Image (cartoon, rainbow, N blue to C red; front, side, top):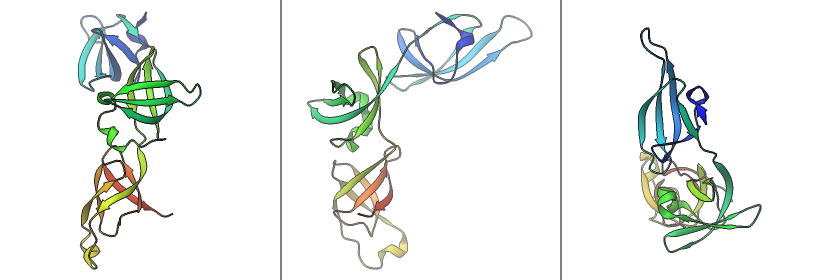
Length: 187
């Protein structure tokens, strides 16, 4: 078992029977009393951030997390099936674990999946993804001077605002963290 002196940013610990990532920590040595460590912990599953204070030297339960690059294959009910690129083993990941990123998943896309033992605990989408525009209204000539935007439905069903010069069939780069159009990709 580790102690508070082993705390560092990004470390995953088991606290109150849940997994938390250490976001920030600070060792404090007051004039009176014993030293302590102030921490900000992020719940791995829910994403909720809590503040907690540990006594200096207190034992903490460090958890080993394994991350793998996996390829998305298909959706089956409310689960998404991913394949390990090295062992070709298939893993079922729940839709709640993927969250908002599921609207950008297309077959063959790679994602980073973290495991605690054999259980997937997080799914990290790539920051940028290239998708084809499936539906969008026509851009009227002269509209581009205003710098406006129009909604476009992508091949995965996601809707993002794009500039007026984007047409159906165009390939665009989208930031999956902000749901924002980044640029048109030339073929």
